[in-house]
Image 1 (cartoon, rainbow, N blue to C red):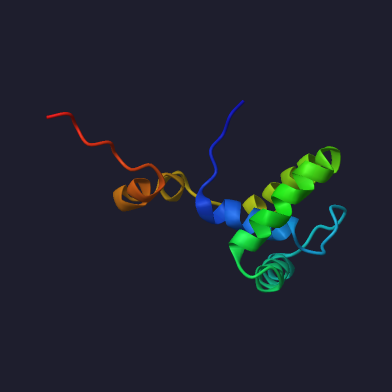
Image 2: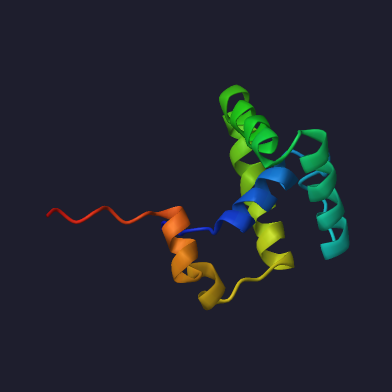
Length: 104
């Protein structure tokens, strides 16, 4: 089954993935937020966290996939999103998938 994940959840999960927290941990929302913040600072922003994630998938895909599933589960549990917020406003959708210009 394919599911979509909003950008904020993805960024948080990438940061948690790149943190020092272990997959055996079950962090509280506060611990998760602290780990995400620390990882973003350590890696120079969310793009740096994405670089760590990509490197892990390239070097150790057998451990990267389960770690990312863990990170997504933890973030989704700490920051549940309603159906409304997942789909976002019209302007959010434009930023994610801009509409193509209609042919004249």
